[in-house]
Image (tube, rainbow, N blue to C red):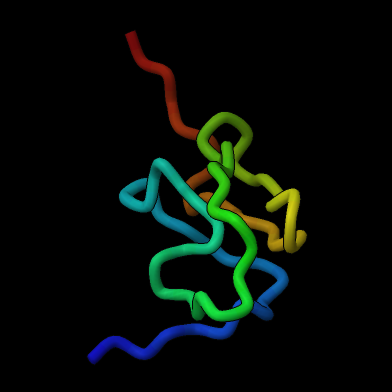
Length: 67
């Protein structure tokens, strides 16, 4: 069984495989969570949750836009 994480960390590093990113994340406790919201971390490489203030940082920086 996967251990659920408390929703108390101020910064979480995420992978490109986590996109699209939502807060709270699936492995977070739900009993004290806020409504699920999209976190637009792909454009700038980092973003804050408007509810809990958790800062999400994308490993490797912003997603590339190759043509």
